[in-house]
Length: 502
Image (cartoon, rainbow, N blue to C red; front, side):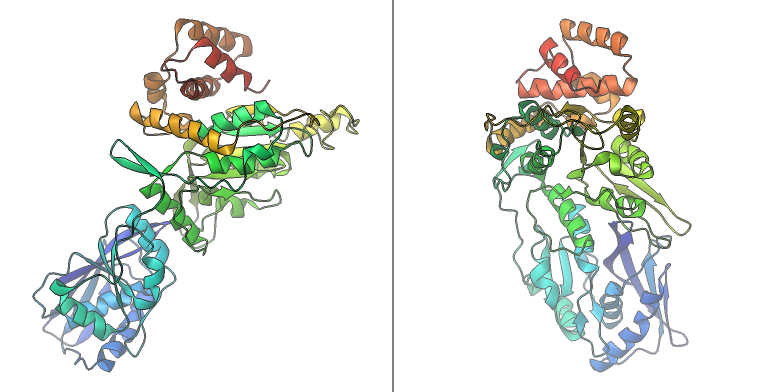
């Protein structure tokens, strides 16, 4: 029995498939078992034609190809080359089990590129379970950007057969790539960051409270809601937060690249987190994903590791806003259909922007508001209390003033975020402060006596929910980190409370 490895999709992640073959005596036949889709069963005819066109005598035996694990549904033409090689190399004594093989076969034996190949290999690379891979030669230039993998490109089935017969003298067709960006090492993990600030906070004049909230949000991955008059800088601040977010590890960079590939974009492999900004008219399916037979990823899933920005927040449909509560709380989204049930990771930073009223002028000192109380109340009621309870930082922005000046640059803010990230990792935090569990809050969010007294008073006075209490503690932890304090003190907690919605 011979075996090599391939992969298939389960949701948005690649699952390793062990491809096994046996050629036994009996009536000549060719069967593929292991929950193979129609595209894999059709591979039998492509494999037969490709082998015959390459002067291979098809063995008069009972050929059985098994795709394990058998309970996993498998699909895609990337299994063609695996199956053909196992049949052609049945008499080869060398072990093939350290190899992953991908490729679609033409009837003449040519090895073709497959659209699923890029995201599949990105996912496998992120899981650190693949080292040596045979791929179509035309995919080599694109795939060689994936770091820490040896790629061997082949143009035809005959080349692939010769490659395995001489595998001890092989050299990869591309050098193993490494990520070349500024980095630092914490807890045996390398973290990469970019120092190119396309949108700079220097462009935002005034709005010191909002910029401070943006810094806290970026440092701890805290959800942020900005309320203010049209043109006061809400969207400007949201766009600039992306460039000061914490660094990415190698695995996180591959996560972002995989999502880019799933969206049919060319992955950049840069340590710049994603920024998704769907329009308020978007449907529930486009934001959360869906599909009757095969669930597809939506904006919430594509924002994983990055920012999900909702401009004009109250104009999103009620069903979208209420459905958003689950990923904001659990950092994952579940899609259930009759034919498929999929769970996507959705660990993102949520930023919302809204006007204070339908006409936008309620907070404007120079322009009169045209809305009556009923319209304003109806507008604000579109955001339910359970939804707003998941917002960590709520900021009412100031009016624009001609005397407003620039203060802190994105570069300076990014340095502070990186310092906070180093502090988090050095004390053993695996998650961002906003994502801490209840047990981790007890371990890392330690308050001094004065801060504890203030918190107890706030709980009694403002009737804070259990979730709100935890969020205040986590925001105070990030503020203490920005202040280079090991313990949360009274000023840190007071500032955290000032960002709660009144």
